[in-house]
Length: 256
View (spheres, rainbow, N blue to C red):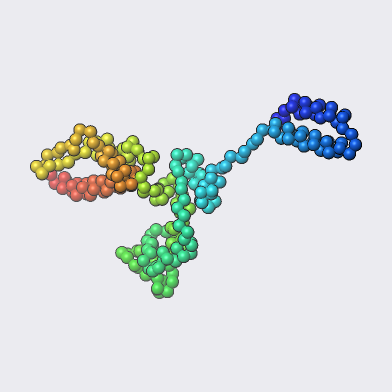
């Protein structure tokens, strides 16, 4: 902490000289005035320190509960360019959970998903003669309230892999063609011109400049959709298609 002693000294000297000229009942008033002047001088010469708002506090000021903000801070420390915005639903938690469970026999969970039996509904209509009632296939049963609460609570999924289920599907200026290409990497669409088959089964390109990433970016801008979301969905479909093709053609190739 630094104090401008020279200024304090000059003021003190000035007012000490003035004191010599004061008399009678005005002395106390003048002394108080001097003291206040000195306080103002000293305060003005002190450096002003403003406490910077922490990242958790900045998230809480946006509307995030502290329990959310503390988890998001860990992601922010690792990925400082990620932006988190709250979606305020104004829904009561218990009302939302009960609404999700109505009718609760429609909320299913696989018996092989966990060994925690608290995740399976054991009410009289879901557990009979000591066995869970199978709702679908061979091992899908009704989820308990505990299970529904777990999967509805975003705090259970605020890690670097599962948080993308909360990613905005809206387009914004942060999405780039380079980002789309990074998603398409490993597929036949990566850094490739659009091509197609004619009715005569000959392959042609759409034009000499337009790539798949260009079309994805244009579609995102035109319809206000997240370009990365579109690219991820297309890649997932393409991967499934390739997988099906491999399953179809591999057995045939053994006989050729």
